[in-house]
Length: 358
Image (cartoon, rainbow, N blue to C red; front, top):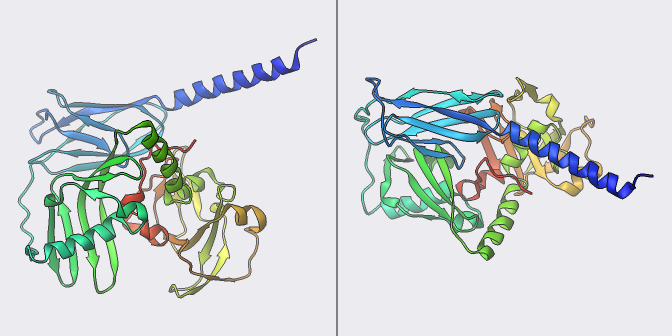
């Protein structure tokens, strides 16, 4: 008679082995290519990276770059080199490796007339920039920008603008990352109290002791659960309830202290495009709360009555008209609106797309 404990152990081991090889097969694609100048000559030492990840490469003498171990899905390939205009290209890997070549154009002189912020004003605007770029969380407050001198400020019509020609280097000692951020544009409107910024970044693991690494492991989990990345991944999986999210559609035109909402299910505001991408088709605002206990106890998508809720600090307002993938990556950042809790979680709480909590 077969040993039942042995059979259970064998079955579990077989399942884990198959799961491992299935995962390995899905994450073993290569993205490679050549970076050329406008005369089709190879460019050596160009910086090539995947936005929001830990994937970084330098082109060799033949202009070649390569990334391995990639999963199917969407990526944003970025190329940067001194003397040339930076290039960014959306890449979609669909169950096979991809070769993608790109040309860089020599950078033209920027002739836009601006009012340069004088040295006397610079400390004031540096504080404003750090608050609204890094964020307002405890993690953000402990971040340090190592090369503030690369920031270029201008001020026009109550709008503070900032940009860089090189990477802005940020150390995050709470999460254990060094972030290199290529800031395209930052705008803070003091009159409307609104902030817009965009750019591309690369993450590097910081060196630390075993004790520090354990602390980073804990802090990264704390930063991930309930984050926008967590929510987008939950939408892609189609089960936000089990992940602890409560999602409502906002019925108010504005956001007073109390808002009228209705529960809404992901299938009501998403549409599957293919095996790699999901489109968010609901163009109005959503109100999201992360509360695993409440989501498991009494959350129902079927309730049609209006609910009056307090717009609390723990809630987030989210709206976009774009596409997302399984990594929590979203496309069309121009259409992205974030308010509330997520609005205060910015670069200081950001994680690379490779991050998966265990």
